[in-house]
Length: 213
Image (cartoon, rainbow, N blue to C red; front, side):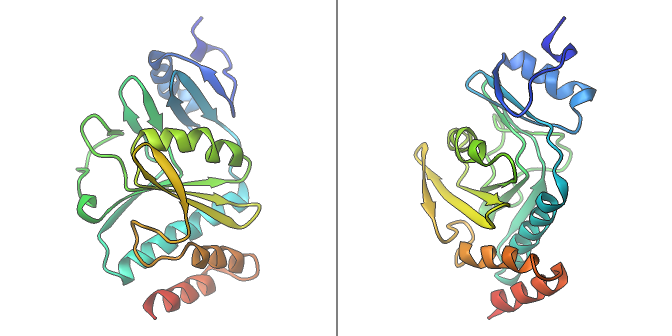
């Protein structure tokens, strides 16, 4: 019996071949899972996302869209998209963006983005409610290896955004986005804090006011 025909461990990294990764991601029982692969290790995330995760996810996606629109920055975003570097790496981030000169680089009609053909996304975002240690640790190493330009982790419980600029196979913490110039991470954190007290329409109006000023 193959690994995908039995119950695989979730929320942890397990040893697996690339073929087993492909079997897992094509298995209908994991249709709603997020699946990652790096350095011969497979991670399946099945935990329910819940209200808090979903709300912060929605707000951060809207904030990026509003900022790019008001600043006339070319951008194309994706929600839970699959990226693969055949044989060695794969990821399904909560949100990802191609920005600037690469905004339109991915043509319509791709079921997943093949990183052997296309460049990696400019910005990747993971929303962490229960997965924070992994998002800061092994996933950051994965995104470093994929040469993502910038990586944000939305810490739902602490209402914080941990942002990294990635270059030369490593990463450093930043307070202002490098790929969305002029966007302070602290402003996004304030937007998330405001959602704890008021509705998203009011938060979006506040964000637009900040971005247009």
